[in-house]
Length: 305
Ligand code: GLU
Image (cartoon, rainbow, N blue to C red; front, side, top):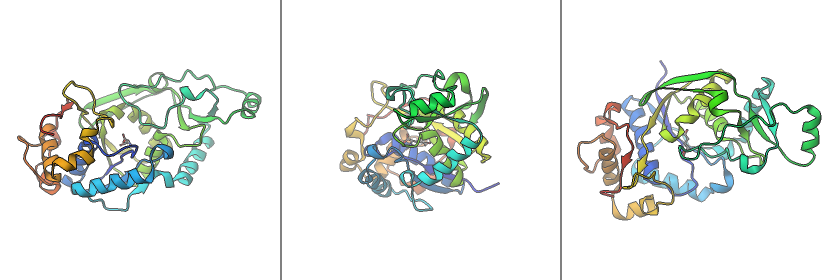
């Protein structure tokens, strides 16, 4: 068996917040407790929303918290040629078609969240003739969609157990390149995880719904499918999911009030790894980490922070 390789893949469209830190921590502990490698990938594929200054702040925050990674971080904004090669492979399989639907229907670069599930694409542009495509291309640059097979794709999540989706019914054909030329999230994630040799993906359960289509894409390219562990989301005291707008829980604010060990210890307690909140660094947490201790229900965090 190949050595475990885990990763953390933040989207730097704001400062890191506590939810990102929980994800980074569990990804790190899971990989390191198995004697594995850990990688960092900056998911700045949506270039206008993810300036370099925020990516740099994200790396700085992770370093301050005590994370280290085994290879230089990858930046998705620098990997357009690799995504293009994979797009060509999908084209050669007859799986790509241009889509001229309006922008409001096309917001596919971001990782989808539980609350803002995209509607399944009704296939409006799936069967345009070459003449229709040529006529529309004269007035509008199309997005590119991937035709999904009429198949059910299932997997066993390392934390939540079995999960399956019928791709045509539950997901529909999805955007792999937006009309403005930015790459779609699903394509970039799969290509990067595969080429980086990632064997273990740990991420928020808001992305669970993307996983079957990613698995199908790994298989289409002939790449090994990693193991997936989705993790609970952090919520505020009212049970609302934490978001980038909760400024008092971003790293700038947290670092004013706490040491890295305090933040990690409180998070480890909140998600079930520690029986009480006590300051601890990552290497000490590696020794007590066990997936069986991690909660499956969402985690309320405001107390203590
Ligand atoms: N970049 C995504 C996010 O920050 C995570 C994607 C992944 O881990 O696959 O939500």
